[in-house]
Length: 476
Image 1 (cartoon, rainbow, N blue to C red):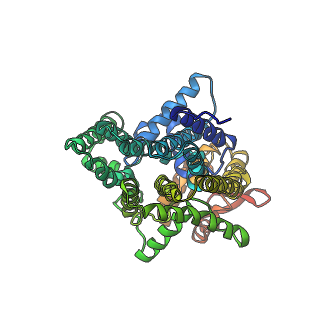
Image 2 (image 1 turned 45 degrees about the vertical axis):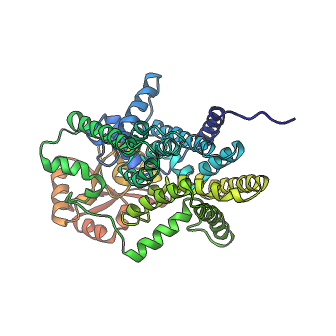
Image 3 (image 1 turned 180 degrees about the horizontal axis):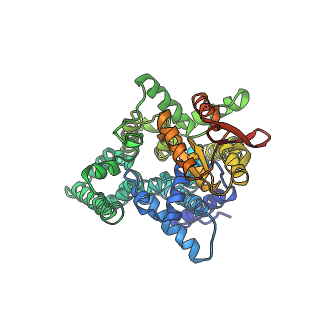
């Protein structure tokens, strides 16, 4: 007996439910720096820092989601609601992708398997488990692509969806060439202006509201600093482009084009070979799909080119910026598989999805769920029990946010004290005020810091296995 076909809505709901269950089944304790920093801002209701100039919307949506949890009695840290929010966003993005494939002419089962393949791809799965801004933009840019590729796209809606993606992260401006291409192929000459107007107005209104009600810059310099965001992270807060030498940028970008599917980097032997094969197969299928040269193929190629133009020049070694490349690559891969008989292409997608699920689960997701694999977390939780409640802790890197969040201790961020005289002046001021200052053994692995603090004064305070804590105080 032939099974009745699901409607698009039923297929989309099924993908969302399955992907959400997958995402919620294992909690990541990787706890990236930005996610912890956002959780701190959410708990403090620090709206000025929640409306980041490069990704305006995530912090505010995260704050609202956290408050919703607290209405129903949740009293824990904001990091868990933020991670759950990303689980929802990742699942919703996969569901929208299933709907997009269905509307693009793929069969029901093929659309389901394509969405499943996306959901277990390394970059999509891992960053759906972490508190981070990128899955919000991924969801909205998927909605944008689905509407733009429809038979009768509504340009105002395309603009609004694209505005949502840009507010998720400004990098999604780079989808503009692909969107302009597909919209200008319509006979209605007003399509492109309506799309652009809708998008620009929505983004402008959001930034104006954020500036007036949250940031409230007191000068043009402060306003510029807000908009620069990640491009002004240095101590001097000056503009800095995070580029890499051209040859390194190309190599990093190409390698990352594979790693988004399966994390073979750092593996050896069979694991490395299996990861490379898993990563190469969808790329090969995508190349076959790109050769079709039809409207959809050109759209996705322009999509990839637009993002590549930015992310070859800005941190080509950072995987989170490549999450939404997976939408284009899997769409092209399923297009390339059309040359195969239906049973063979369905079997190919199913086998790849099962293999990638197992590989990424074993080598990425499960290790990230083990607290022992996060030494910064282990150290912060030990510091909470080893240092006095009112102590100050010298911290750098992840510890700058881990110390206040997980250890509940006050941090002295070392990135602002590279100069010895400035560091000693800060330590002297705290000591004069009767404050206790500590530093961990892991932090002291920085030889220059260890030498400076040894000159100032160090004495052992606590020791447990490979964890150690020292009190910083001038020798009398």
